[in-house]
Length: 67
Image (cartoon, rainbow, N blue to C red):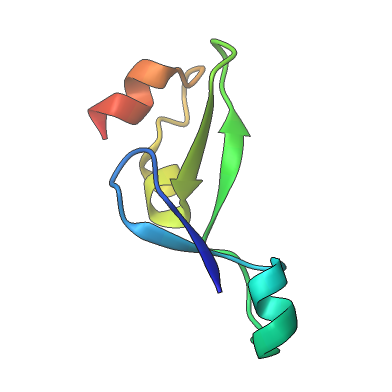
């Protein structure tokens, strides 16, 4: 299993489809994704943190840091 820390909360998030899944035959989905934000920055966020982002405005790195 491969994991990566969430840029907002720091929790380790499972990333599906890596070489680790090939050898272990582990199934399942990823627990987060990389987003390109309105200010051009990219952040890997868990789905819980993605759900906490503002929906009524363009999301920026400042929003990620405020989580």
